[in-house]
Length: 129
Ligand code: THU
Image (tube, rainbow, N blue to C red; front, side):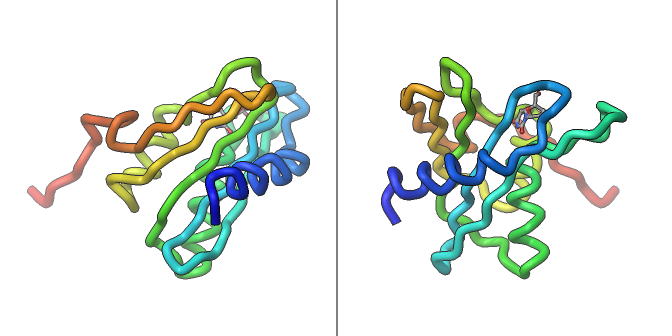
């Protein structure tokens, strides 16, 4: 699976985003190490705080299917610039992978390639006290 193919999957998923309140659809394609693709979109709610981001939905789908080992993630929006995952999603991504490459593409095809390590250098970690 090439980067371009993964981004294309995310772009296709974007069509299913449910974002009537923000008007800001997000599409994600998460590639697992066993070659499966888990897509995710943002799902908003009239009770705005209940909205869930595309990245977390993709992770939740994969984990629900018993998959926790990830290789790459693509995130696409219709914004003029690449929009990196929010802080909450970074923490959730980090829970399962500390070195995930993330490809982030704007509407016009501008691509930012980064990693969760770069985006989230100081994660919260809990300890048994
Ligand atoms: N959103 C995501 O899906 N991922 C992010 O990382 C940031 C924001 C969604 C949430 C909301 O539905 C819309 O984008 C505008 O904030």
